Length: 558
Image (cartoon, helix red, strand yellow):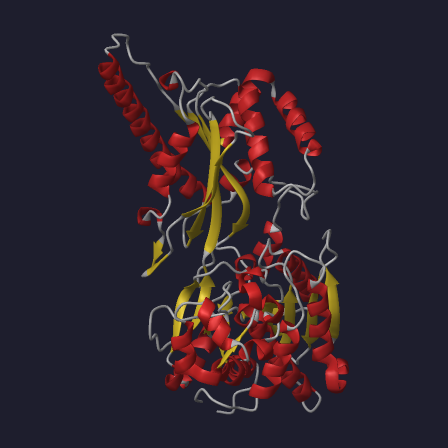
């Protein structure tokens, strides 16, 4: 099977164009318009009756009223494969003057010169691939993947009208992947209900999120058998107030935060390495002091948070590693400040003694314990509940986490300088490869097509909904729960809180692979896919994986 035209090409391309043409920036109620279109396409041509179930499954407690699109083909075996993809996108403002065409790949194709002029390096790629490229928001991330799933599901539905399928298949198209993955979290519960109702045995899930080149002139097409995870460690930095005319009488929280960011952000020493794959380094996603206006007082409180991608580190392990580094940085910072004060005194012939400074590093759990020891656990609980209720329901959960952390600091009665470590949402568990039938089937299909140079690797390198399909055995999340100010044990969480259906995810425990469209520029105005592979090859590969899984149920002829 070579990359090129195939019977899959035209229908898959048509489905994608229909989906891309519907705006679905998350979080927004417009995502439902795509969900309804998915259901409509699946049932066209009299296929609706082929499904044991088809429709929309509402996301419990969702403020936008969103729903997952689903379809279920029941085979002769309870063994079941899930086809998964998300239907939302990031915004389109990055297209600038071409934004009105961002959801119309055909119109955008007519304006490639203007797009190339805005996007360095794009003209050379257009010259190389020509009309095999298709541009537009959501093309590779990931409406082409959803379109491939639809094409496969329709083909299987047509086949089921002629003969019984040897295994069952579920298609799910979910909203909100680009935000907080509300769709797939609902899908976990839906799959458990379906399993109970029909007595299913899940072989795993094929996610069709995008794949891309890993280096210039990369000849490979990629498949992944696990996924990277994400933690968002956050840092409340407490200094000491002072007038700018006497800066050594205080501690500049911004300066301390800068030293911490210098040590932590983009630091390869904090990268997980597992079986030859290495996670990207942490990056600072947000940093600010907590002054709300101009004055001549040193900023005595600041905060920032890091995006940390994981392959193996648990929340407890990362917290311990960060604490060690923060303690070392704080010690160096205070020594540096002491030395600066000594030099300043020499310059001014000041014979007084430099300030003696010491600091402390605390986790949120330790800070709460200190506050409870001072004023009582019930008082702390009531105070935090009152604060939480007073905050706007729409307040960003990172900001809400900060406000609760600040309040705990006040209740503790402690003094700075200090750094409080805690976790903000969201949390994406990493998932290592789960050997079994799905992984074996994918490996066999890859081996059948050496011409495609399919390279099977373990960890999908981008954050995705796959994180919520299974939990690695032994994953301890106690440190996450104890150190996330907005964590709730109830799912779905009440307004402003954050929770995950951890028990349900563990019960589902689905093996997974990512087998998706191929292209470049996700989340960029140059977002584009390679049509020959994404429309012509990808659906065939998915079908072959499904067929190999189905063959496990057929009686041996030998």
